[in-house]
Length: 121
Image 1 (cartoon, rainbow, N blue to C red):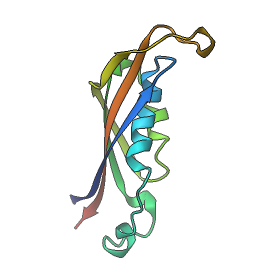
Image 2 (image 1 turned 90 degrees about the vertical axis):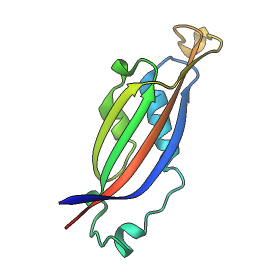
Image 3 (image 1 turned 135 degrees about the vertical axis):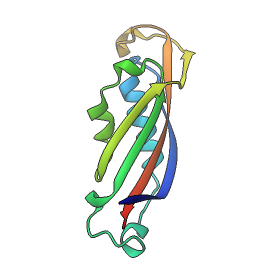
Image 4 (image 1 turned 120 degrees about the horizontal axis):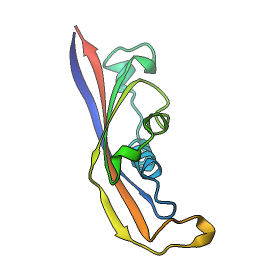
């Protein structure tokens, strides 16, 4: 079966304190889907349930090897989900605050692209 893209949404997420790339990546995915409604999944594509959607997520973030993939994908409530994580995003010097459990002065910025596809016969 061929796949057809319905929508691609982009987002950005930041972890200002804690230096957790998973947090930044999860926030980027959440930002990408925050203001979407997908009635076309039913009205145009003819799906019966949102779990029939195929969702491909790409995230670029500092320290990609530290990303906990299942936590990032948990942001998405439905669909057959996959995640690709790559090095990217940005590290910006912030200010470490001990009460916030900062390890250093880094703020981590991630970017995400979330693509919703359907299978077409």
